Image (cartoon, rainbow, N blue to C red):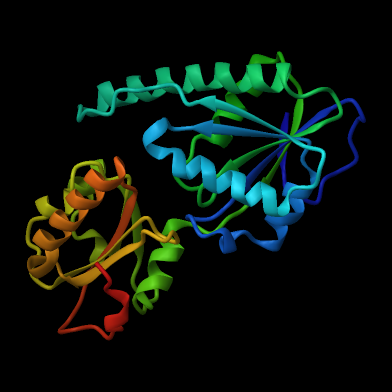
Length: 281
């Protein structure tokens, strides 16, 4: 099993092909032309659900397939293996993720063997971009090492929630000559005011922005359900808007049963230029 770009090389007619397609942050129009072409090649789509609370995410993928996939094609739906999402130390977290990845690998391998005939093309539709905080490529690599199924892997990049956040707030992702640090929320305390740069925070299950120390002069650009009709945006000095974000976030989670948000923490001098239209929560 080898990873390659979408300009595929000549391969055996009996070899399976797996497409890992980035589908953007939630807006159906985030599909790139490359992604649409890849979708049209697939015989089987593997849709990994996240439970009833997140059925809207599954529905959106079906919507994309109805618009762009070419018949005949099949959709195989499975539920993602559950995992413990309670706060825990790094050792316990690493162990939990390793166990979840093994079980997810078992599931993906079974799908590839049972649902995809030799010579066919299967596809996983991945939120955002497969290279950023998504486990699909790593799990397919793990499956390769098992040696029980052979497939050519092709990766199609997608528009990330990070890019969408910056676009919706009408800001560049970086400031002139400064770095950008991307981190999961659980590592935010270790990052701190990193190298006088900006910090993009993802996978925040515990409102880590409320625990930032020395927040004077720090702005937050926050977004949830980016690219969807339920999109929420708030921007402003962290000291002034953090309680509002907590309130809006709590209401949204109660209403939808889940929340996916991303935010940028930025060191600024004075008040940065931004459009008031970028604040809609």
